[in-house]
Length: 192
Image 1 (tube, one colour):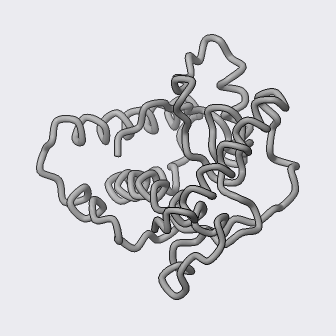
Image 2 (tube, helix red, strand yellow; image 1 turned 180 degrees about the horizontal axis):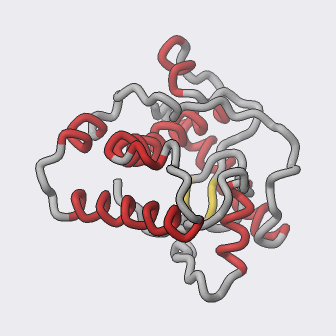
């Protein structure tokens, strides 16, 4: 539940996938790409391309839906596993927002001050976690079944209007095939 990269200073209305694309194309940003055999889990707003694995669109994804009905198809099984793993990310944001409510509604400071406040909050969050300090927020959000206020989401295909096409078509096809292989293995092994 530690953050490894932060981009601060964008307007709140900027789409996350646009910020990622800009970070990937900016040599000065030094975005930490995963090794060739690894990938980041991302939500459906991002391109499913080498290094970034998104869930299947228009397939059940929200963890609450799986509490009532188990996953039946290979794509549902994949999305369920993806959601359970991504839940760690949502819990990390839950700790951050609980500890620093200023991040939910930034005071009317200058953009530079808002950026610096954001960076300071993330740095303090990581310090507390890395130092293993006794912390009520991490204790609460370390539970895998914690209820998140604005974490779980349904994955819908709202078109690709926000999805930048970083990565080549070959990279996107590679990742789609890998995702399909994982989904088939989950189904064959009856995992989850």
